[in-house]
Amino acid sequence: MNELILRTRAFGAGALRRMKDFWEDEDGMGTVEVILIIVVLIGLVIVFKKEISGIVESVFKTIKADTKVITG
Image 1 (cartoon, rainbow, N blue to C red):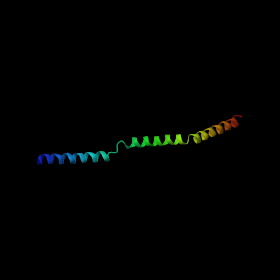
Image 2 (tube, one colour):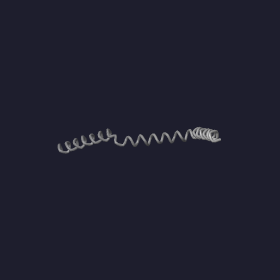
Image 3 (cartoon, helix red, strand yellow):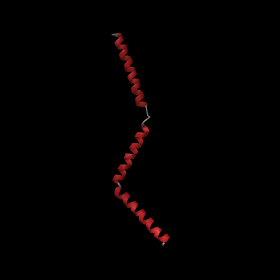
Image 4 (cartoon, rainbow, N blue to C red):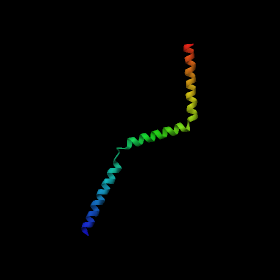
């Protein structure tokens, strides 16, 4: 019986140590952060699609008009 208790305690301590090591491990955090940033940026593009399109069209119209003045 005592041997079973000692084995259970040893397993419990090892499991707690492994769980603590897993919790403190930050090797994959860079990848997760990059993915979250990309998801947020895609969401912003979807939400502000009309505004972004308007700005891009305006910029290209200005570039086209300025190009005509320079070459013209």
